[in-house]
Image (cartoon, rainbow, N blue to C red):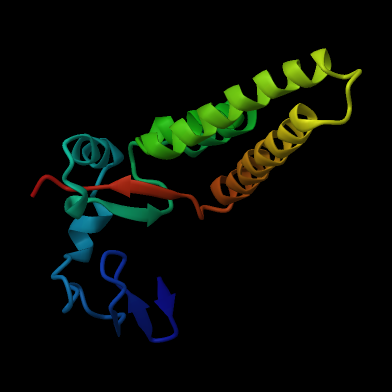
Length: 157
């Protein structure tokens, strides 16, 4: 991220002159970082090597923006756009939120005659949780369109 004549390292957030090609804080080589791919980032996350992964703004060569937009718009409430880039924990959060929301909607319809009491309070709280998931989904659409969605990338060496 560039700040005037300075930029920040995407790995360690060290502030440095923008002309430097290597971060003095963590020794990240920026030319190699630009060649990093999401496929290698997904593999590193799967292997538990989180120290090799950098979450980057913008799209590496192996991630298509139009695919991300379509996945987020049409299947984003299930977390499909997170699964596509290998961020499985957030994808699971969205999937669980979707299932809870669907089950909650069905239960609310079946208990619609009893709009008071313990169960109705539980249903109301779950609707609020589902609303949070849907709000994050809408924010993710904007992040993807404006290249602000963080995508994990890595390099083998």
